Structures are given as structure tokens and as C-alpha cells.
Length: 115
Length: 110
Image 1: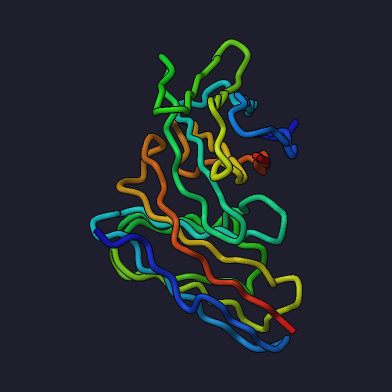
Image 2 (image 1 turned 90 degrees about the horizontal axis):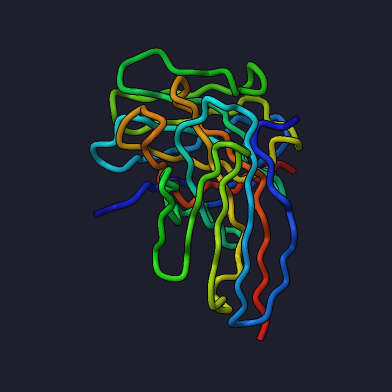
């Protein structure tokens, strides 16, 4: 079946502009995660959604970052007033359930470049 | 001490070699363990889960050592196509958010 999809695949924006990144999880997956990966670095957790429960926003680096998810479908990650340090690949992953035993499946990522 | 640690490498091995990576974790309550593979400029892809009894998938063997708090990944008969970064992920029973290591780079050369 279809995997996790993300759009756009690449985004170049000017410093100070807002950007919106989209993630379509695997159908039936109730858990959705956003990560950031800077060049040559590991995965940095940003936010996690599970069904209609309140999201875990503990990884968001600043109040310029926010994310929404409608039910168990699409999620959007918004970065306001982008800064150069926001340049990174933003990865979305989904999981069958919000249980530690379930594997995550990643989308191809959105490569964000802030000039 | 970091929650999850990996030797960044790179591990540079010839085709056909056997290579092993370890991933150490600090939380003794950790219950779920995974290995992911990440190719350059690509997303991580699940390679295998790690079970308490150890598990094997073709040329890949994963093991868990709870006493010493590490997991391992063994690759036999390395192929050029095995060149990638291998990430481990560890979850504790009380957390839905896995912690990823920074990855170990493997380069398999002819």
C-alpha cells in the first residue's frame, strides 16, 4: 500500500517568511510524529499526535513552530518567521499505534532551505 | 551520558566482510528496540526490530543484551549496497516517543 507522503519535497524560502509542510500518514496509522534532521546530525523529535488526544509538543524548539492534525489523517507543520537555523530536512513518520512496540515508517521528508 | 549512543564510524570494510555495530542505551526500563537504515539524503527505513531472543533476517542478525544495555547489528557477507548509516531506536514502555541514536556510517568497498 501507499507509504507516508510529504510535500513539498523541497522548499527554499527567505528568512522571515512562514512555511507550511504537509504529511500524509499511512492509512490506518493512528500515531504521527514530526522530526527534524540537520545535515550530518541525528533525528530531533518535534511533536507527536495520537488520534484525538492532545499532542505531545515537548520537542518543538520555539513558539515559531506549530503543528496540527485532523483526526487520524493529514498533518501540517508550520514554521513562522523562518530563520537560517531552521534549514534542515523535516521528516514525518507514522505508526500503527501509539505504543513503544510499534515501528515507525518515515516519509521522504521536506528539505527546507532558509536563505 | 546520552540516552542512546552509537559509534559514528565510518566503518570501512571490503565486500564480503562481516561487520557489527553496537548501540548502547541508558534507560534500563527500555523495552522496544529497532534498527533503521538511512541512505544518503533519504529517509530512515526500518531494517528490523530487535527481540529479546535475538533475530535474524538473511545476512542481518540483531541481538539484545539487557545486562549491559546494548543492542547489536551484525551484517555478514557485506555488499556494496549495504553502504548506509544505521540508526538504532529505543523506546521505554512509558513513552511513545522513541529515542534515536545518531547513527553509524558503513562504507563497503570493492
